Image: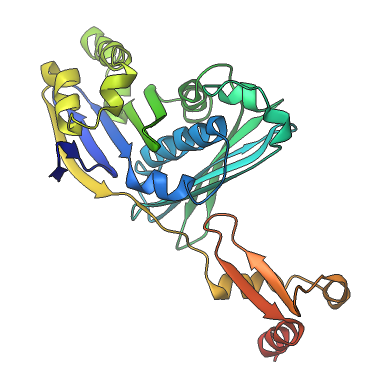
Amino acid sequence: MIENGIIDFDKVLYFTLKNSSIRGRFVKLDKAINSILKRHDYTLPVSLCLADALSSCCCIGSLLKFNGYFTIQASGKEKLKTMLADYSNNGEIRGYVNYDKNALNGIKKDASIDQLMHDGHLAFTAIESKSNKRYQGIIPVQKGSFSKCIDYYFKKSEQTNSEIICFSELSNKTYISSAILIQATPEELNDTSENQLNLFEEASLFLKSLNKSEVLSRQISMENILYKLFHSFEVRVQKEITIKDNCRCSLDRVKKTLLNISNAELDELTFSDGRLEVICEFCKNLTKFSRQDLFSIRKSINS
């Protein structure tokens, strides 16, 4: 939809390059990313890092062949301690960051993830909803852009020819984030012809030629960007999924978490105004329980 010359985004496009066996994903986040970031009081470098993680998470998560979730979790010892980006295959995203605000004083607004974390690691986890089976790859944070971390993950963990670019910025008090991923499918990997081996390299060069202002433009449609990049490959958009900010927290989940608290620990908890406050890190939803509520929950579950 176009309003006042500005195009609505918040979607992931599934595309293929007809003259090759290359598939791709193109994500652009607008209202969804602003909804998430404006809920938290993160510094600009942290907000941009989470935006990169969320757009990348959408790209990779949309490759899943089963119903489930995909998460990118960053863990470090200093500055940025924990960052979690989460994508479900129905297009819902959420994310949060835990960091030392004082330790980031003076850091550049465009600081890369390795500058925000000391001795950090990234965990990429796919979770199948039905079986709760998990598939995980862990890599050290790479120097440079978030894209380099994703490329390293695919090279080391997936052993797949992949290329990704991701950009995020704050302009006129509004965030926008985007990522484009191309990946060689198994058909191309099994084709050893010189022509097929060169196709992915050529497509990668085209992708890396795209500049930040083009990718993040609010006046150029995603379809037009894809055509400009890959028209010689006869790029085809197969489908699109709407991306939305939605947290999976619920009262039942909170109750299950509280069941892990022993009676002794329960006695040591601090109750504000006679109630225990439980806040979701993702959506900041606040749930309050009295001491009697907690005992009643435990009794009802155990009975």
